[in-house]
Length: 366
Ligand code: SAM
View (spheres, rainbow, N blue to C red):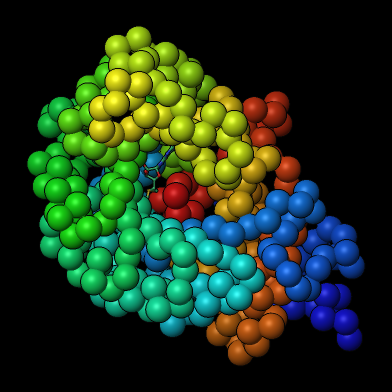
């Protein structure tokens, strides 16, 4: 049978609350036209070269925009992919043209022996290998991560005021994260990017403080718009701080010059340097007010082994069970292709009928 039309043992999950158990046979669009070679492309011609690998759904923090304070239910251990399974997907993705990998979670650095996993992924040979972390374990792990082949880091930090930091993250300590950033730079994990999720009325009065922090440290501070991916379901449009407002506020104090004004590359962040030549940079990730789906080149592997073609996707293709049932590399690669092929033109946050995905950011892998 033609490998494109041959059924593969994959399932899709829907956005219903019981999504983890509901499974139906996949029915991708226009399968006959899906290429079985060449780059990982969707029906809109977007080529996918960037893979986000979530290595755990667990986190040691409970950030207000991400996880509930109490009662988080994590996946049982046996549902989480092993290092070998994650590395296998990464290797297959490399063969499909993926050039950049970002390791994420949950909090990736709380996965036991994560340095070994980084080493296994690094050995595959990606052009870029980065990791997103809340920074709480960096003082201990920055050097081993660099030695294992990690190239750079994004560190999340939503306030420069200790008490506010603690109230946003509900656990953890600002000093620990700032010290971790220093350790990352000493280990050569450069450039260091600092992720700040702005929530209106919570931390948006710190925009200028963060710009000053970028100038003082030489780091790139990325202001991320609050997305409807919080487990509490508290997201409201009014709490989104528009990136254009952020840029206007910064440039009134520190004039900015766009680094890639035409936004020709698929990076989610628009980055700006300071016009006065200061070190450091600021960037905005305007996922809500200026979606960048048209140039999206990303796909994701969740910690429990599902391929997601969009953070906001209402379906995902689980490949874990196929891998454990002995599926061949060719079959798994085809399942990855099918997921990408089924990608919608946009995330739809601004559509009247938008339904938020069942999984929160931490459960998907941000
Ligand atoms: N634990 C790591 C960390 O804190 O960076 C990695 C996982 S975290 C889910 C990845 C990124 O998603 C972080 O920068 C976090 O701030 C961001 N994030 C989480 N929930 C978000 C939301 N509702 N809207 C926008 N960004 C969010």
